[in-house]
Image (cartoon, rainbow, N blue to C red; front, side, top):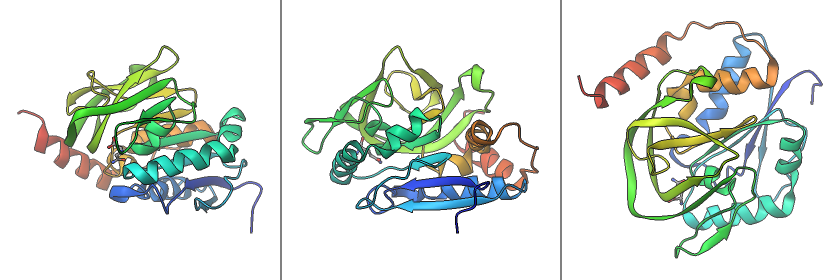
Amino acid sequence: MQSESALRLVWIYPDLLSTYGDQGNVLVLEQRARRRGIDVEIVHVRSADPVPESGDIYLIGGGEDRPQILGAERLRRDGGLQRAIARGAALLAVCAGYQIMGSSFGGDEGQPVAGIGLLDISSVRGQARAVGELVAEVDATLNVPTLTGFENHMGVTQLGPDVRPLSRTLVGIGNGDGTEGCHSGRIVGTYLHGPALARNPGLADLLLGWATGPLAPLDDGWFDRLREERLAAVLPR
Ligand code: GLN
């Protein structure tokens, strides 16, 4: 049953783009909303199905090169995500999903493949795989604590003037120029897995806040312990 008042989370193409447990991002948003008494409805959109336009927060994950190419083609033809963003919906796009949001990215042979142009970024295949833990300081305008997560990608991403870097890397590669991810309007793109929102509840609340307005604080004991453990493992003492 669809309820008019429920927060709608839309998980795009779980059959193509869902590596490294990125679907956990959906669960974290769901739990953080429910713990605040917000009703949640989750829509899983398989790649053969149209993307509904009525979502509040859209999520898309990482993937291998070929599913990434297929996902980009289907999203472009479908147009539902683009219309939802034009309406003001929020989006978290991770890794392959992040690259797809740009104007183009490097395919399985390094060939340029068209993205869907929701972010002013373009990606190419780099010389070496970026793999390992990542720590980065978030753009101060977003008021989100230090990012922690892990990355595993060949892509190098160049940001255009219409987006801002999400963060500056302390450890790891990210976009490849000292920055990690980007944001523009209510869209966040990132290379981070972990899942990103389990490692960074502040990022989860940024997205939830965009969709629902000011949020009550939560007791984040478990999240804090995970963050402390991961940050201590990679930051120099
Ligand atoms: N295929 C892309 C790259 O290697 C994305 C990888 C991923 O999503 N993990 O850059």
